[in-house]
Length: 509
Image 1 (cartoon, rainbow, N blue to C red):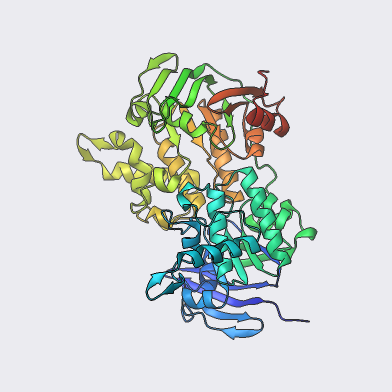
Image 2 (tube, rainbow, N blue to C red):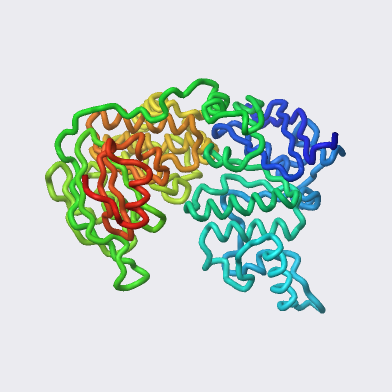
């Protein structure tokens, strides 16, 4: 039997005070898609950084073999020279350059010190055509959608004759049609013998594309098998070390008084005069209710939530009432004082202060409550922060730890804890489970459910229809900035929601 293309044997990696990987084994065959899954903090990123040469030989224990031969990868360039290419969740493209320039970045064809542009674009077109990538090599990358930018990354890797392609959360910010296009390309690459390591929290995708699945938990191998012989439930139990009997813990609860009422909300596009990002949206949320917010990419969900919270990019019109009283929301500070909280879609850019500690991030929105005049009360800050860490089961070495060093799920819980400390009447959630693992998702859903049971009104925007159907009492569908449908969850289906989102055929029920 032929040797596997890649073997990682007994890989052990230590950081100060923690063992990130403990004798992990992983192998990959030519033309195979092998999914690597696990909770945030399970060790997936560390293993991939070892394979990519980010953590060079000598900084870890264990052996890497390529086609049966031991190799010492002493850096990123050496890993690339062995045909290993990693496409990270945060794309590493020069957005102001063309597709062709990005494909040949660092090795552009030149003569006498001058770039041979015709040759560069011709060779780029050949590479794109060879792998069935529908891209114009002269197009500026910044004009492409995120999904097509990802194809540029793939083309650059293939131009370097990569035989091992690592995709880290490749669909976290892609629309459905872009996901389907990516899957089709991966299948074509399989046929050409390119092997792929596919890292994703989306198990439906894993089972749609993977031949094999390896699960890591707490830095160790937790299980592996042929994808066709496993189930989502089995993989989840290997990931979290327990059975998740109820991922969506929505409980029946009576709706109370209206806590948020939005009337004729309009948000103008600051970059395109005359265009509206949100166009005459009206809705209500009652105490104890979770209102789901559905819509395709560009439907206006994020813009609507930002406008309600006083953080819109463009001019806003309309009326907002909290607990029956009209409020003037000109800034997030006004929204917080009115009893609202917003968990943003992009926690790294718009939520966290990455260089600050867990304590500082937790208390950022409630400084008035833990200060005596202009002076911060450190004992009060410590007490309230520790309360949130305990209540939300945030895994952190300590309150002084930088929040950037926490796993994605624990970062998300820090943001939730920040808003819980303000005791909000209305909680606005924009993609609250994006980029976190299934165990952390279950914990986030438990927190949402508990807040609703305590009488908060919750608005939850999500691209994951099962989440909306599992957690919402009602679902509002947006299309092109307008309300395209409203459904009681008992009457809603994925098909009805998609029809309303894509064609505006939703009916008020």
